[in-house]
Image 1 (cartoon, rainbow, N blue to C red):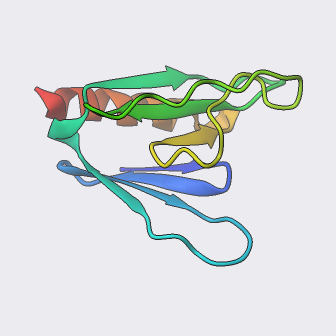
Image 2 (image 1 turned 120 degrees about the horizontal axis):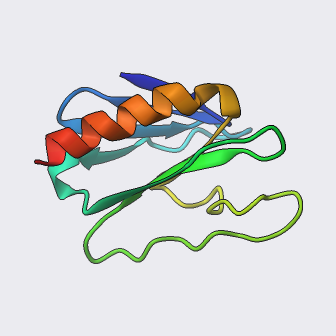
Image 3 (image 1 turned 180 degrees about the vertical axis):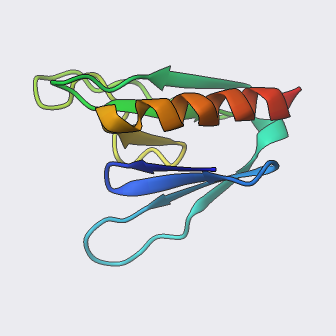
Length: 106
């Protein structure tokens, strides 16, 4: 299962969640998270005006706060390794991804 986001992608194979961001310059290593380690998922759908996001919450790791502002639209910062911004047209795929992850969590 794959969701194409803004400057990245989220993949889920039934056990592992992989967040691969594609910035300009050097490529960072993808963030891999075991689905059973996730304590929660924050999903904000994208709209016509603003991108949404998918963020995974992990134990012992505070969730990155949403950055406020006209250009940001209330999303976590790009540097947060456990989240990815999504476009409005990816809302359906992101909804299915979140449901699959919730089911895998148990």
